[in-house]
Length: 310
Image (tube, rainbow, N blue to C red; front, side, top):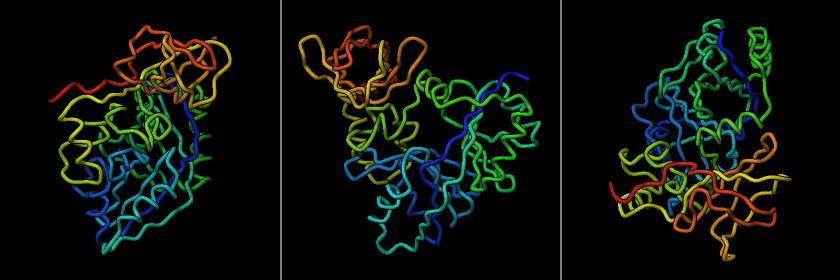
């Protein structure tokens, strides 16, 4: 069996949204397509404000036309509830905050074989698999095959982890998972793209933010930016040496002009890697920037920057 690594984490949010208007209401608020409202469908997307800026992200699992489960690793339940609550007017929608449960990530070429050994299915794209109290969907953490396994039951996760270790899965720390994410160019929301930022600045449009689903909160701003030109800012991979800096950290060019800020950072072998949001017209791959932590280098684009007009 090919090597598979595992990672255990606690989500920041777990909500259940139900009642007869739940489907249409979520469709009007979520940045990605939820239709058809068939049990077993899964969608990853953003929660935007009226100005099209990123409040947070989540996956939405459809468990029936009037039953949806929302999970987010980084965006707190209270943040999503507050956002949704502001826009419930005459809708019959119930939102419940539930215990967050525990998630396990599996990464590697051998994921399919591991799931087979556990008699669990690999979900199709845009779907999730439910087995007893466990839910499984395709992840967004690595260039390699990766899946998320989540349960609200601690005992279910404990037993599953024991079985995975017995199958040779090696559990790693957050550092290794974050390095894989950075290498794959997967944006961390809201730490790298958040409440002061537009989804196009993180290369999220067309993937986590739909251009075709129709009206949703923030959609007009997203469409206008996409149609009129590329964003003025974009995400870049940054590297540096020495002590890991505290983020966010202002970054300056050679003439002491601030051109952006370092948003996240992860320690590598003898250096650190990070993700910065920079003004595109002042940032070029290979440039050196300055900050209170010393000199850092722009290694590459982190995500594709939208081209002008499509």
